[in-house]
Image 1 (cartoon, rainbow, N blue to C red):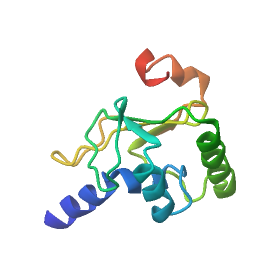
Image 2: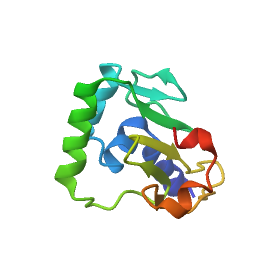
Image 3: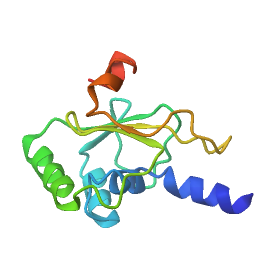
Length: 130
């Protein structure tokens, strides 16, 4: 339906994804991280907050200790509530996100997990963990 397509489109925005992964304390904070060129999607700097992610996109933080510190504080403040969306595979050790929501097909090709579980780490491609 068109309502589910709108929801999927909203949830595939880069700023919303950073917020839902608890990397940003608010959508506004997520937009700041993006506009100031601290966010990489598939190893390319993205400075457009409404950038739409596709299945398989990998989101990373530009190497900068001060940005890592800000994101770690945001994560610590949330106590993982609200629970991150099930279409995000998040590695909190490397501060990376793997986007798994398919807007076209409206399905999740992967199950939700937090990559702090050692038994799951070996099941994903090496490229998504580093």
